[in-house]
Length: 269
Image (cartoon, helix red, strand yellow):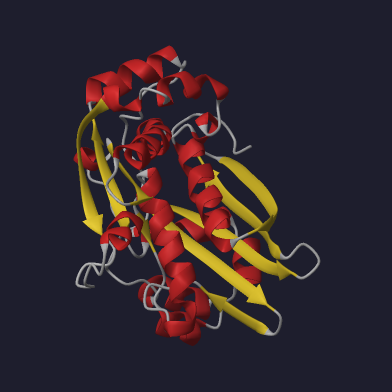
C-alpha cells in the first residue's frame, strides 16, 4: 500500500498530450514530395483517420463503404499544408525534390465530416473526452520497463509511438514519471491485479480521469508483441488482446480501443 501511495503522489509528470477541439478535424500523414498524385493518396488516408478521430468509432477503420468517399477525399478538405521532414537538409537535385518526405497536414470541413459520419451511421463524439492515465509495461527477454514521460534514449520510441497514437485518435493522455516508477517498485503485473478503485485513485492523483493498463511481451515465435489491455468505464470492465503486432500498432489499437469504449461505440474488436 505504501508503494501505491508513493505512485499516486509522485509518479506522473505534468506534461500531457491533449486534443484541442479545433484539432479534431485535422489529420496528418507522411507523403513523398508535394505532387498531386501522392497528395490524393494522403487525403484518402487522412479522411479515414479524421472520421475515426471525430467519432471515436475505430470500427470504421477499413470499412469498405469509405472507398467511394476516399476516392474524392479532396471534396471534404478545407485546407492543407506540408512540413518538410528534412528541413535544413539541402535539396541536391530534382529527383531529391520528388523523393523528399513531407508531413501532409489536412484540415477538414467540420460540417461535411459530420454529415458523412451520419451517412455512415456514426456521429461526432461531442461529450467530454476523459483524460486517460496510461500504465504500459513492456517485456522483451530479461528487460522489463514501464513506458514513461521521461524515458531514456532506449525507450524513447515506444513513448513517442504511444503519444502519437493519442494524437491520432484525439485522446488526452498522461504518462508516469521514470524516477517515481523506479521508487515505487510497482510493475505491470501488479497493476493488472489492483482493484478498479485503486487504479482510479492512481489516475486521479495526477489529473487523469480513467486508467488504461497494458502489458506488452515480445514473442519470438510470432515475431511481434503479445499485448493485453484493461480499462473500467462506467462500472463495466473492458479487456482486449492482440498478438504478433509492432508496438506502434499495439499502442494505436490500445488508444483506439479506449476511444471506442469512451465514445459509446462498443468494445474494441
